[in-house]
Length: 79
Image 1 (cartoon, rainbow, N blue to C red):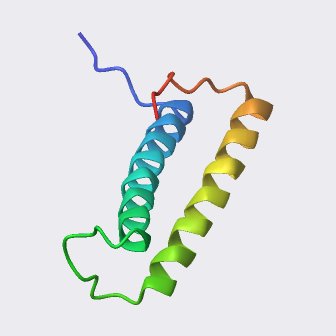
Image 2: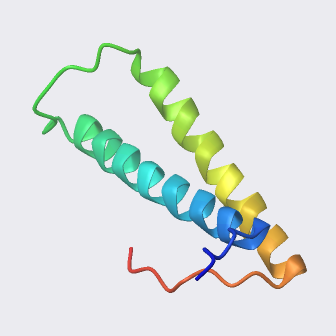
């Protein structure tokens, strides 16, 4: 039986899910940093990490708008 080839929609959804998970983890770390409950000291300056989180959120928004236009459905994810 032939293996189903991955479509661009499959890759799109995969990229979105991976980015959303990474953004969520970074956001949680930044919240803990600001609350002074982070259990380690980041080696990267916090301003860089905050800029990264902001750009990740913007990219998520772009992917969401594109998905709406292209009628690509993302799975329901609990935040």
